[in-house]
Length: 443
Image (cartoon, rainbow, N blue to C red; front, side, top):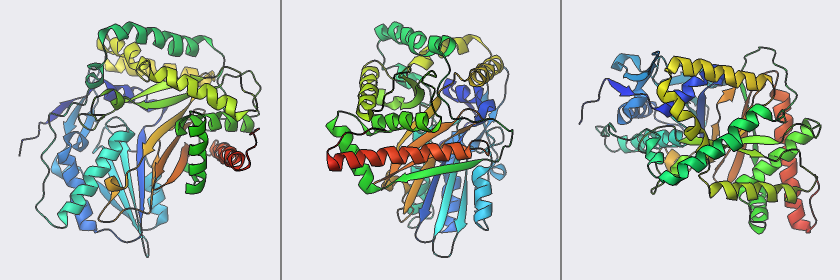
């Protein structure tokens, strides 16, 4: 087995997430619920082995003015699993921050109930995006299952796996870069500086930092209806949910028809690699802003058509790459400490001016085979990173034929987020009714 180095380079994507750590809780969760109990000793061992299988997970993020780096933790300083005595302790773990400067970069909490177990995996965003969280879960679960038959099982450390954004850039032809840079200024930088405020929920920050998560479930039968609705109109599930989000937030916020209808979507940049996979556990997610201006009428089909048209256009023109091409060159010449201060100031300023659009993250499907700990979970969901008010990050993911829509909330935003998610369910139910009756939907 190869010897694991003491230090690893912090990639630009790691540093980029660290730039914005001061604007929110930069962590993601995967929550799994099982219909029976897990083996605690085997789970503990699987978690520890994962820290060596992907060595960057067993590191701490070392602050440095010029270029931070990853430093491996000693064996005695990398305890991962917490055992919750009750639901209250479990929720406290869920809502607590994870400190990348202390490490390790993921932690887990197990709650034993009378007839079932609940497992929560918490990952620092510096080390991974949501696709990476899925890879971490797959490593843990496969190791857990293998240990039942082979107690001496060990994975070879992934020391040479590529974690850099260059694994994506290398597949972009040179002649595309000027176009992408032009799109960065046209679609991202200039609108953020000179356009009006973005549509927001009426949230006033009261500095109460009691984190909670709010979720709503789209059941299997409704999910089938809305997927078919989109298929008939050349729209994806992602397109439908974005359109439903616009209709829901304008209803709940009592939209004035002046604030801009904008939302940032996450894009998995692994799509540009031939195999669709990353070289290791890393951040390879980009952002794309859907901007409908102030043009939204009551016809949901019209909104869906506009969203679908925009998404098809961007997918044909390097979707999600713009921010990296625009910002990466700057980071080459400026120290990490300077970039961090500039980025936090810019994000906070845009948020205070109401110009920062909400994020609506497509976290994809949780594959049952990737989260099977001898047995598949009966429920599985991702929970997103959480920005401080007034900004909000929403997300959705699917598992086992149902869909979960979630957001992190603070006391000042919880009721508004709940109203928005409830309104999204109403909009989606209306689409199902339209398909069944053959009538046209009016919000």
